[in-house]
Image (cartoon, protein in one colour):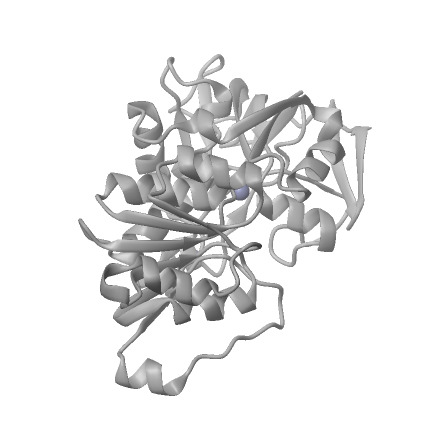
Length: 342
Ligand SMILES: [Zn+2]
Ligand SMILES: [Zn+2]
């Protein structure tokens, strides 16, 4: 089969590789659509210590398709079923799993290889995180399950309530999903982002106020001005993955407010928090990472019900071999998600 193979940062090749065969408990899926993701762009540029442990490696983790073959013992899907899967499944045995934080599993089984004609889904993911998709959802729409599950978990942890002002930093795919979910929770959403294309998308996603970070001299003062009585945002979600923006996210948040640190930064970086504000203003800072099988299921339900507008994010379509071009578009902020067809 044809697949994109990651050799090293900046070096991905569209190559002929062996078509996998499903072993016991495994499922082989013919990819219908794969989606680009910010994490893949980061991996393309600088590698990824968790997602890609050795090279050359198959690449990409957001996909949906049709079951082409099933291994021994697989009972809940059949050849011909339309399916989507998460890019991981937890072990349920390690310490984080046992205290109910399965997204932090120390033995998370990961799946890469969406940018290919076929993908082999490992048994643990088949068991926990392979779902059949309703007929009315396209493959590309269903493939949003994974990023949406992350966003759903982020909104849940944020505890945002009806009528609260939520400030979201970042107008990429995550910022747009978070915006749609927060609007659904009855929040007033203020998006801080960059780039005309993305900010237009934020408006389409329902943002009440939009701040262009590149054209605003003092973002912190401006967010405070737009918040109730100038106090600052009730809840802030950082979805850019840059330490200096993490600091801004803390600064725009009101007394006793909550900051969700959602965007992963480069390894080895750190950020500073004012101890006075942290203590005397009782800020809550929450790190939020990944998703759980429950959120994967809930995300598919939200897509099926149309609560989240998938098409708003699927801005471009290309052939699989054009992935480098897709990354260029994403890097320039001129696409949200590119749908790749094998
Ligand atoms: Zn992703
Ligand atoms: Zn575990």
